[in-house]
Every structure is written in C-alpha cells, then in structure tokens.
Length: 89
Ligand code: FES
Image (tube, rainbow, N blue to C red; front, top):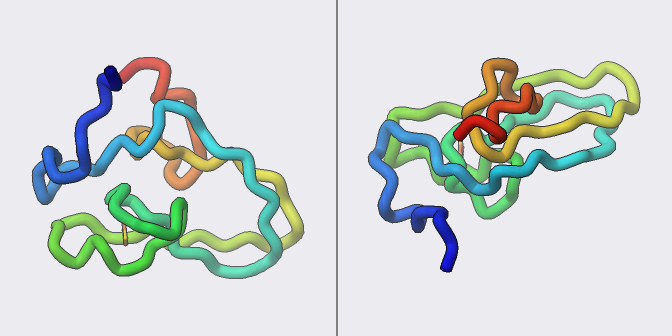
C-alpha cells in the first residue's frame, strides 16, 4: 500500500507530492512554466490545472542545452530544481 495521498486529498493551497524522487531532464533553450501545484497531467510543466488552487506556475529560462534535476515533491527551496528536500518529507 502506498503512503502517498491521492491528489483529491490535498488542500487547495497545498502542492501535491507527485513523487519523492526527482526527475532528470535534458532541456533546450526556452522559457518553461514549471508546475508548482503538482496537479498537471503534463509533468513537470504547467497545464493550467492550478486554476482551482492558490498556487501558480514558476517560470524559468534555460539559455543553453542543459541537463537539470527537476523537483517532483514541490518542497524544494530552489524550484523547479531539486535540492534534496524529498529525502526529508
Ligand atoms: S498545473 Fe500546476 S502550476 Fe499550473
């Protein structure tokens, strides 16, 4: 049995913990909208699902092709990047 809550169990001001692992991604130069609410169906990018919460996407810019470690627990202090917070929640 999973210890993770269902998305419907989170309050509107509470980001969903999608995973307690981060996600490695190769990103191309562009401006991205990171999903800070954890409710997107286009993980880890915003798809507008935050509209019924008080949470907003976090815009970030990539200037050159880069490998990044993206936070999926939404508790990182350096969103959208992982800072290891998933090991403490
Ligand atoms: S869908 Fe999560 S911040 Fe937009």
